[in-house]
Amino acid sequence: MTLVAFDFDGTLSEAEMLVALGERYGVAEAIGDITARAMRGELSYAESLRERAAMLDGLPEHEAAAAYEETTLRPGAADVLDRLHDAGHTTAILTGGFTPGVEAALERDGAGVDRIVANDLPTADGELTGEVTGPLIEGTKDDALDDLCAEYGVDRANTVAVGDGANDLPMLKAAGHAVGFEPKDAVEPHCDDVVTTMDALAGLFERTGLLD
Image (cartoon, rainbow, N blue to C red; front, side, top):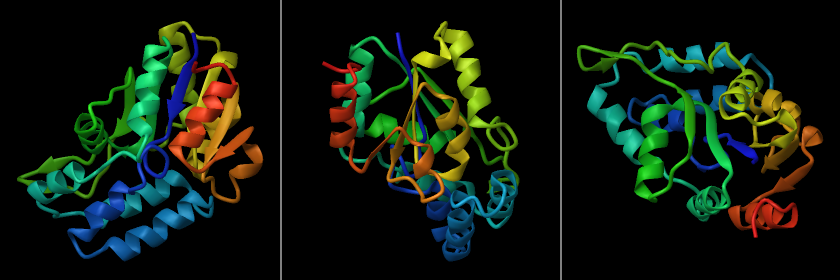
């Protein structure tokens, strides 16, 4: 059995959830600038995430829900997930993004994974509080990968990680096979393979024996 762990924003999905949320509050450009710096490794992910979440303080809960509902998977992503499941592999999404957006995107395409490890933006009195909670703020994706290996009885050597940004580096370095999906310049040297489409990812999984 193999455990295949995916990043979400920028990997399974083209969208950046924080930017979509920011568009509903007039702060998308500022959030996007911080996101780009964080993905290039120019500032710590935890610092960048808290800074961006703070910009959303006061965003109405219904506006956040609408942004989550607009989150979509890349073309072909649902097919890759379904084929991995049918082949008997364990699949997981490890993302600094937010649970409701991930769940909405999967549901829209009728896709699923075995585990979602994600963060959340708390609300109070019908508005976002500007805070962020979850396991992947200070926690890193290699630790999350190790936890999943222990839970599902998979050796780390039998894991595949797929990601694009600096916060994916810990799991890419830890996994048995690291796949960059349109990886940032600082990430690409740490990838065993690089793909730019879900069809190409499926082809890679076929060549490596994960998929028939």
